[in-house]
Length: 71
Image (tube, rainbow, N blue to C red; front, top):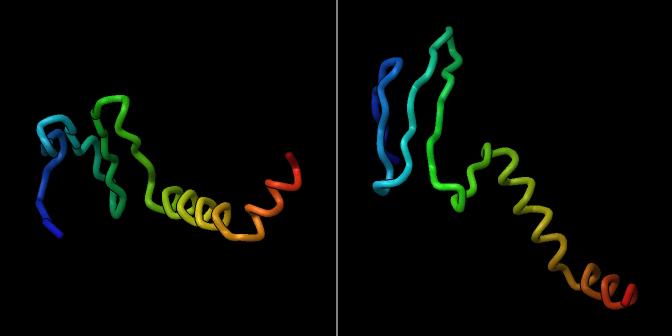
């Protein structure tokens, strides 16, 4: 993991196409702005993990059989 220090209104660039800007800092909260191409999905980590878990469950054999029975 790369750890960087940034101040308000400072940015960093990822892979020449994603810009992450620190918008505001209040106590222990940091507001971050992300400018990226539309084809790059951006999720909060907890949402991403929920999506991954739902995808795993959909691939389980019981789920596959249930889908086959629908059609």
